[in-house]
Length: 265
Image (cartoon, rainbow, N blue to C red; front, top):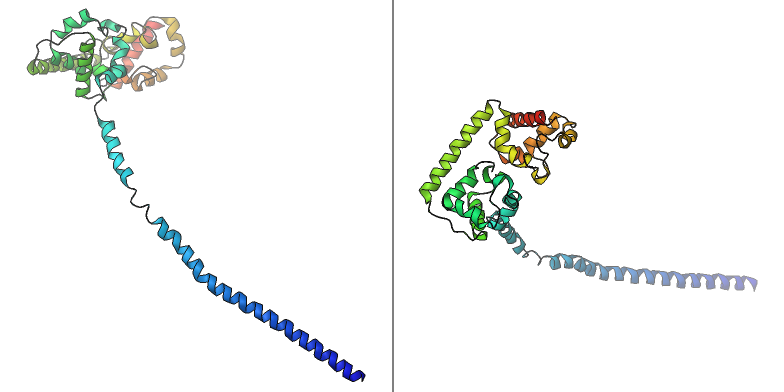
């Protein structure tokens, strides 16, 4: 009797184990089927972003905007823009005899020479005025626009002086520049100073130290001659490179600095 009970217990345990094992196998099969079903779906979802990201390619019009921006940057500046950039510093205050903006009487005398002659004088420099007002980046067309604008502001019309007179004025101015350059090349710093530096250093325009004023020059001389040379050759604050006279050699500029320092100690 006891043996029969033991056998029944063993059989019952075996059956329970078989049922549990069957349930586990069933769960495994369901998980495998679920993975097989999800795999294609995941591959489709992975490929979906690629197809969705393809359309943005046509967005190339921005590239065509770049040439337009370049063209705008290359367009000649207006007369008013050029005046503020290169002319106002002297013509606002009448520095070194420059005709003031809006002064009809001062501009009327100059306008009699003709527009081309005035433009040639500005391009090549005249008196204390450096070529192109000290800004060599300006084009001849931009210079012409600025002259026309200054005449209009003064209520003056340019007189005669056609193309031939303008060309002759340009040639004369060029010859004068060469002659002055040759004189300066001889080591005469005073001549270079009179041509390129006096307009500001003789009047104190734009904060320039006045030649002969020891108090104004003292702190600058203390920085050393090499620093003064560098500032004069390459430009510093409101002072353009070489005082706006790009045709001067470094030695000519240094000679002018030597002259100003000697006069201001």
